[in-house]
Length: 459
Image 1 (tube, rainbow, N blue to C red):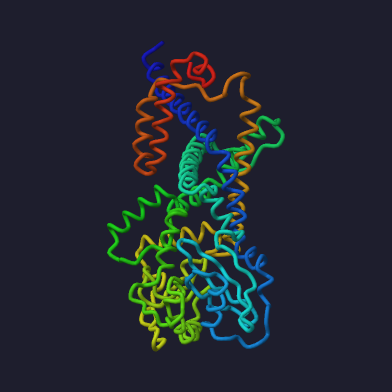
Image 2 (cartoon, one colour):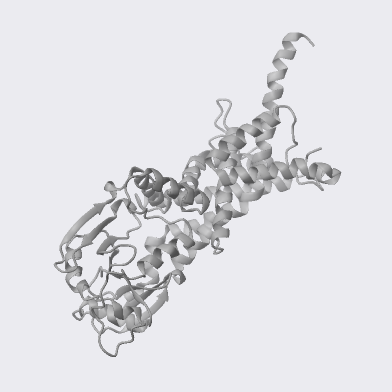
């Protein structure tokens, strides 16, 4: 072989080894995260339609009376009587004079929603906030209903999915001018080419959308999101707490603070003979009668929650809890006069909070609905197609008796792997640790078994 041909073949050999390496990690990523991607795509699609599903599920409370409503404090008292030992967490400003009033009550870290007929004060229903259908879907999507452990699993799956999508873009990115098999699948070249094209074309169309959904969901996770909150606390001068939580444990801690009356709150309702161990008896909720009309005049985006003083905030407050976070505002109120002492809008929040707020609103499909929902469904269906086509291709191509992973390579393996570990480990620490663990298991233990090497393609 001439020196020139040797010089040309060496870069080609390195490119081939790099291609096989990335293909192998693409395979590993898919092997781990495909079941989670299917789960997240299905539950995420259901949650996208929260604005349509939730009113339909609560349609029985949309038209309960045509009579004048009694005072908000009387409605709160009726709700408190139905849930002994609870305190007012928030009074939801009615959006219609015919609809049932929603009152949120707190008991420890528990949040309870009470539906009250505003004219007769009859309690129509009592339900735990986390037992409502859309909240169950929310926790199925973000934590698999497993708490902190589920959140870590979802974060790992999201991180490996990011690797899967990035490596897939590298593997299937068009290297010539043809459109067939790149922008649309070829239908007349047999089933093998069809499934390959379906996988590649779908990935090319939805990868950027899917990457955005994955990255915008990371602030909710326990480890990555918790680290981000810590950095925000250290770097952002604004002391206002962020309005996103990092898992159910973080959410319960915030609810517990909001459910604990302020120590400076005097027992305005205390009277001889009242049970002093009932926390609802230690707070005067009469100011809500003055505050409700004032808050209604501010025209905040619904739902609007009016909350009493607590350990979370020492003042009466009103806030928009709309899913479209850029439309949210919060008011600090004077309980004696009803005056608005301070108004904070979304645009007054720190830059990091605004970026995350926009990301969450797009993630949930509410920023520019209904197109936002259409894009979300399109991305979810694309991810389901990716998972299905990958499974079909693997099953059809897998040699009998082995896993079917692309063969491991030697040249350039160590340097490329170290580079990936350093870069991704810095951006996604939990993923970096899991990737390092995979390498250690593969190189340290599985290499010693001839059968394992053959099964995994390590020979």
